Length: 80
Image (tube, rainbow, N blue to C red; front, side, top):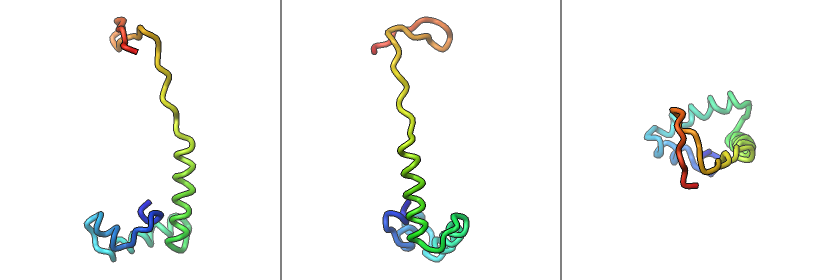
């Protein structure tokens, strides 16, 4: 996601305590695995993929009534 946010190899290297050359080599491998040729295409793909994940997030489960079962089978009164 750092690429999509406009971070340079030098910025990413500093964040990860790596050399910019190491970051560049890792990005080359990532581009190959994603089937893209450059930084802009990788960023666009990441935004599309991560955007679809955040839209399909599950909602919180509903709160149950006043009495719920404790994991050992005894009744427990909740504050909710």
